[in-house]
Length: 131
Image (cartoon, rainbow, N blue to C red; front, side):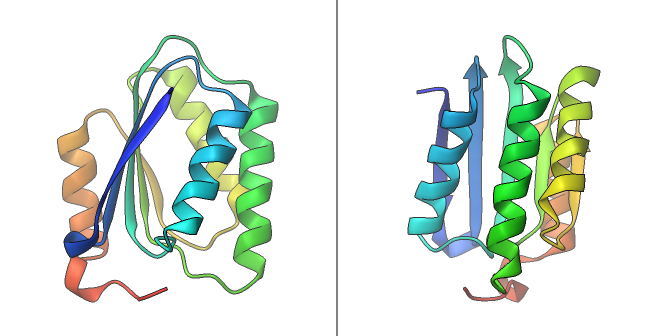
């Protein structure tokens, strides 16, 4: 599976990582599973540092549009930190941010430690909203 994740309920945090090739189907599956778990408002770290190639821009835009549709329903979304070691992946993360319209902080980092520090600062686990 190209995307794996761990949900840390006590910390209201989702840590996901993708490796190799990431497709639109993979992204939708992950989003659907996280929605089923009821963790939209949790803080999220997506580590994309192990991707072998960048997903298609069209796939990123579709994923963002799907998130925007869910946000239009009044869902609360927690901040998302995206770990990207290449400019190509970082650029795609910015496309997702622009198209998702989820009204949440999104930021790109070069390492997981900086990403974690930022989500902790943006939304401490004891101050995140419930779904």
